Image (cartoon, rainbow, N blue to C red; front, side, top):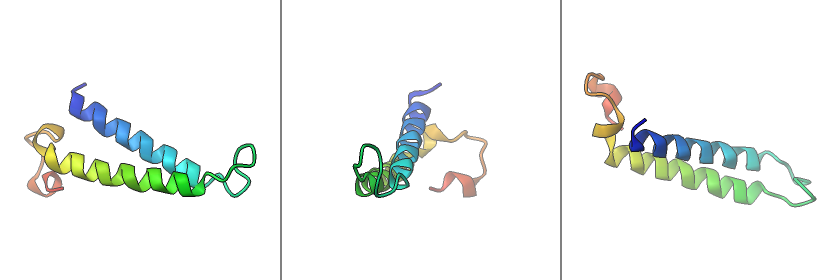
Length: 72
């Protein structure tokens, strides 16, 4: 698996972890509210994924993909 795909999957997993942290609720884990931290991680990961894919779109997407899919 190319490095570009590994980085993309890492950012997607980080976004999923942030989304899970958002929904832990006010009681959370051991009484700690992870909502604000989870939402910050989620939005930061989504922004980083967007920037990452826009900078490395040539390597991330196959060359035979349609033009509409290649525009990020």
